[in-house]
Length: 62
Image (cartoon, rainbow, N blue to C red; front, top):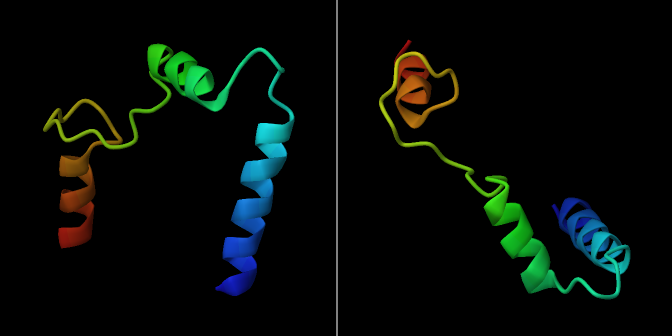
């Protein structure tokens, strides 16, 4: 577990180091949010969409 967490922290700071100097972390989050990249969980019960929380519940039941 320690190795995984260390790798995640190293990767996070490695990525932060490669951000352009005029883009801060908060600006990067705003850009990602405007591009809909921060929508991690979808709680809709849409049966047409494959990656929703409702679809995950159906899979877990079976």
